[in-house]
Image (cartoon, rainbow, N blue to C red; front, top):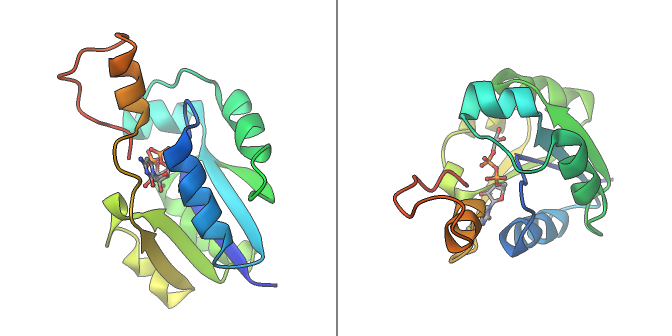
Length: 139
Ligand code: C2G
């Protein structure tokens, strides 16, 4: 069984996330999604999520391409995750291109083109929740 893993916040789940998860699953038979906890998001990514970790976990688990959701609590857990779950392919959107090449020692590393025109930040801006000057923090 060819196992794929990907990481993310997945707040306000949208078509860009779904496109990523669909393409990630196409690279194997089993997709593990490592969802950032609220603590990790705030302390490491300065992201304040609309949905809590538990809510984001439930939403991602409901996506047909996803087989398992586990928590992301640190930047350093990727190598141990890949080893523990016997992962064959690590996948991220290409806004992260190059950032995780150190994993090539343990598994394939694939960066997929982002879906243009949509992001959690854009949703918040379009709804008038945040200003348009906000840094587009949604990778
Ligand atoms: N994504 C995408 N297209 C978009 C928006 C997001 O392909 N329009 C992808 C991102 O590239 C990422 C995944 O969807 O691979 C999740 O995006 P985020 O929830 O913004 O996750 P991020 O903050 O990038 O966290 O350790 C890695 C981090 O946890 C990644």
